[in-house]
Image: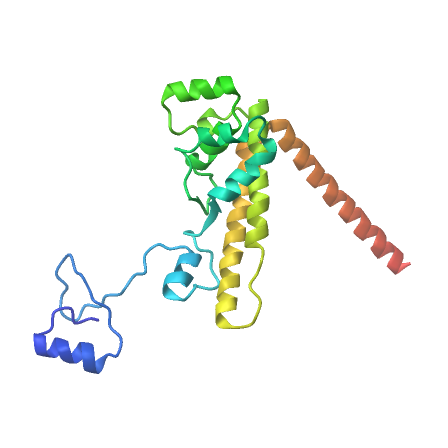
Length: 237
């Protein structure tokens, strides 16, 4: 690997005799003799690494991990919140839909995904304004947290997360190396899912709803703590 430009005869000996496995190198600048180099796999999620190269880097969080949502999962999550003719609502987003949506490790929803949800749940009047505007993407900038529409969007997105969690949380069974690596991939995807949930509740959910959720979480912790204390006292007595 350190000899980037050996003579032709030596090159043949290196590639086919001395080293059983070699990668072709494409250099965009001269490489001095004796200088080491390395092969990079690029920036890939754990799922891509396992699928393409057959390995996952264990014991660390991969910043390139993504959570994939399919078009079908998105539409199914929106169906309960949709009112009116379903065929008409689907027709609204035919030119906006993508086969899959990759949600990054930051948890920030792609504007294209959010736009589909917003358009599906629009009233006819709002949709006509959107249609006449020639906009292709709405996203967070056009999200009204306190509106009825904003609440429906939040409910739909949380429903989507529920569907994704059901799929992602299904761990492969077995103790083979492949099964262990697949479980590591699932763990990374679940971390992304947590970030997505945090993003929705922090930036998209109605403020009052977010406050109630926070209070409920605090109350639940207090109940859990008091129950634990009471149990300890009883055992000690």
